Amino acid sequence: MSVHITEQGRVRYAARGEASLRDARSSVRVWLALILALGGIGCQEAPSGPPERIVLIVVDTLRRDHLACYGSQVPTPNIDRLAARGQTLTNAVSSFHQTTMSMAALFTGRTPSIESGNRRKTLGWNGRNWCGISRFADPGSADACVPRALATLGEAMSDAGYWTLGVASNALLFDPAGYSEGFADWVEVGRPHWRPGTLDPAERRQFYVAHDGTQVNAAVAEALERRPSDRFFLYVHYMDAHDYSLGTGRRSYERHVQQADAAVGALLEMLEDRGLAEDAVVVLTADHGERLEERHPVPGGVGHRGNPSFDYLLRVPLIVSPARFEDPTVPMRSEDLHRWLRTLAGLEPARPSELRDDELFLTEMKWQTYRSGRWKSTWFRRSRRSLLFDLLADPQERNDVAEAHPEVLAQHRQRIAELSRRLTAEGAAAAADALTQDDRLRLEALGYLEEEASAGSP
Image 1: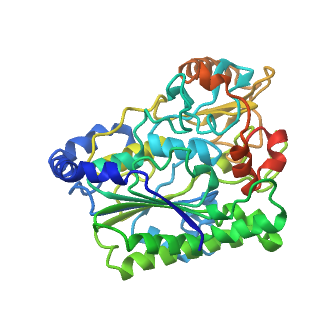
Image 2: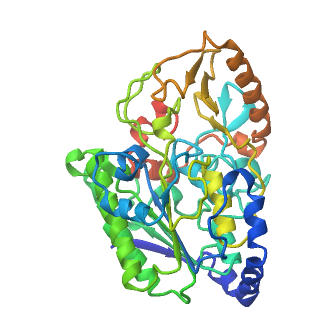
Image 3: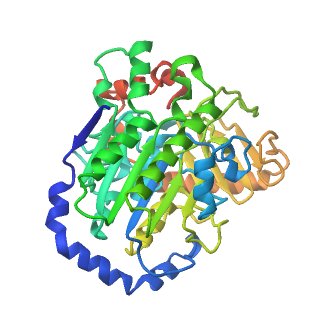
């Protein structure tokens, strides 16, 4: 097993000590008020206070429609059992079509954006900007991709009195990106298998094996042996579904979803064997989905590069066990999940999203995509070309109905202009364009670099 363990957050966590625990206990008394304050995000069935443990599982590149509990024919028995003990939310979407932005939204509660103030040109695609929240970076400093000024999910859980453990296996999340802020123990699985320069196919397969679900679970087991308390927040990230195109033999996406399901099952069994499943809330989701040769008015192949982002890339599973939501149809974006996890831990909700509850806005390299209610439009940056889809009548997004509904397009255009101004990054962040050698290595390790120039972003 190849892991890289950082000391991020250990000193800060120890210094908070008993004060954080007192804060967590006092927050229980205002639990019901906090739940009601969530408004459109939903309410728990039994507001009895924070659980002893919170486990957040992210399966990278997992399409919702490839889980049996969401109606798929792909056998996923372990995730199905988790859903049977809890609930499946049916209106969860990723806040962006790729990892760095969706995970930044999940970790900070902010809407990701690469708007520069010029509709035709976005921020440069690089390790400083590709988290989508560089508008919060400290001017004049070499700030992290997740700016230090923003409180992260790890910091929130530490404030709530939990020991925090993160086990990351996606190279784009590795330090110094900033996702590790607030975690008392942060483990990066597969990092020692990076090599300087170009990765040949054999080296890439070695990296693929070094961060599969078996290795991730081994890292979790080892880290849990170091835990100072049974009250913890555990974040685990699996790459098995993402890596269906990187492994030997290019096994099918469905087979790799089943491989991820097996890893999830082994993790849940590990927690049960250690007596850590009781009084725990387990949340399973994905950072985004995947396009698998579906046909749309805009040509494109497989992958999750978006441009534009069709809903196969955005619809993600969200399973909560045991059930905590009264309404499993409540809209949940990545940033909404951040806010809900805070309230689950007994903290006050984070500030509201920059978007309305029913909105989704994706600031892509070549397109701007906006969704509200049944309508979804996407706009090509270098021209006035636009497409409009009626998701109620055409959920597969095959029919452009822009000519039939100019009034909807006009409303969307006005709202996109407003949001673009609100979500613009300026100054040093907007000026940084070049990929660093470390940026390139991260992209190459995950199989992106060959197509990055033509696609614009992974």
